[in-house]
Picture 1 (spheres, rainbow, N blue to C red):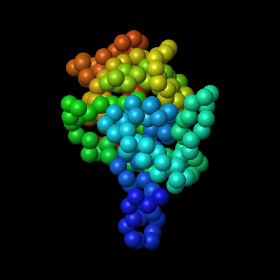
Picture 2: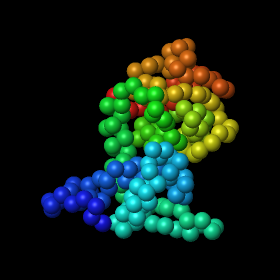
Picture 3: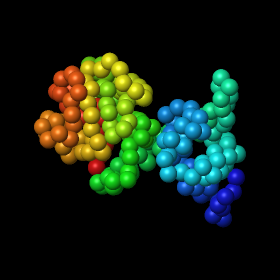
Picture 4: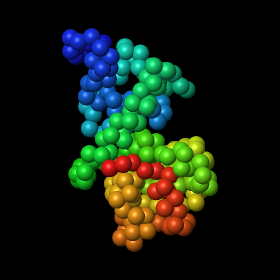
Length: 213
């Protein structure tokens, strides 16, 4: 795999040669959430051209980062053990990039997989360990997620379901994650809409999930 070579011999250079091409790391990000079919990857990356997706999948396979696997007559893509080693790197990049997010542009969207990784990067397991187990049903933009926190364990799945607190928010959820906006103020100003459950639990959510801005 050598779509781009930098002519230097070190680990950072080799890493960039493997995952530095446009869209490659976002494919890895989404596969960290779970195996995906080609169409699911395309849906999660709305702007990726079909030929570029095919090229990146081929390159990542050749590098041993992802693999194709048959599942009930369909082909899915999943990370190899080597590819899964990228998880702490991707979570670290998510936290680092959060500091420079700024305000969203109109054309920017929140996808279920991107928000799942954001929540993983923001999760404070040590804080959650001292809080009661809580389930949140969150509608974040067009993404619907069921977020279950049980002590230091976090599970994020697509869809809705029974939850202690169900709420809806847009990109301004980042202001709660950063601590810029207090949970009660977020509800009072309409940044967050409580759909069911006690709005007080949004404070527990903000304690559990935090990213420095």
